[in-house]
Amino acid sequence: MGTEKHPPVEDVGVYLHRLTRSPAEGAILERLPKAEDGLEIVLFDTGTGSLQWRVLIPEVLVKLKSITITRAEGPSKLCGIPEVFVNTLEPGDGVPGSHWEKPYWISGFIKASSGMRAWGHSAPTTGYDKCDFRCEWEDGTVYEGRFDLQRGGTDGGEYFADSFRSRVRFYSGLAPTMPHIKSRDLYTKIVDDSPGAKRLCRHILAHCEL
Image (cartoon, rainbow, N blue to C red; front, side, top):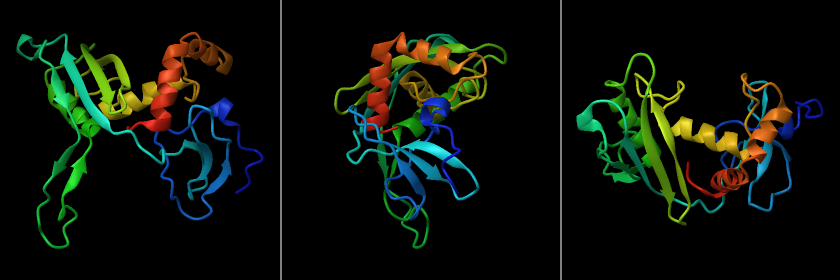
């Protein structure tokens, strides 16, 4: 598939999920120069007739230390109590041939998504309950924000892990233009008006476990 008609990444942004450093042979059609902050972006042939700009998973991945989420609204017995989610090594079931035969890791992001699904049973059917969160990685990087918990455990239709990836991508300046934003120039201005957030999100995309 030719790349000459594919829009530049500055116009369309990158796909939500990062790309393994060992895709199928020939799947990477173009590599952009590595950015000073470490971001590596490639043009990826999905093999299904479409192309995507993707951020490569870093060679040295900074591991997640913890995700702490505190519910600020909702049932009083669930509010104000920090819930901490971390990567955990599960023992496996030991069944020969089973997908879970050997010990395996579960990401703190997956566990946080599960936690929000559980809280989502008591979230309002209209509106949301505010939840404050803090993500910390082993290099000291910290991201703090708010998850607006809706019935079912999502924020804007996304579970915690994808919601977090979406906001990091947005504030890095590498998201597709959202329907409620009138132009690419306006989106760029919104991001550039918060340079600290942009640096932080680009660092997370370039180096940290997601």
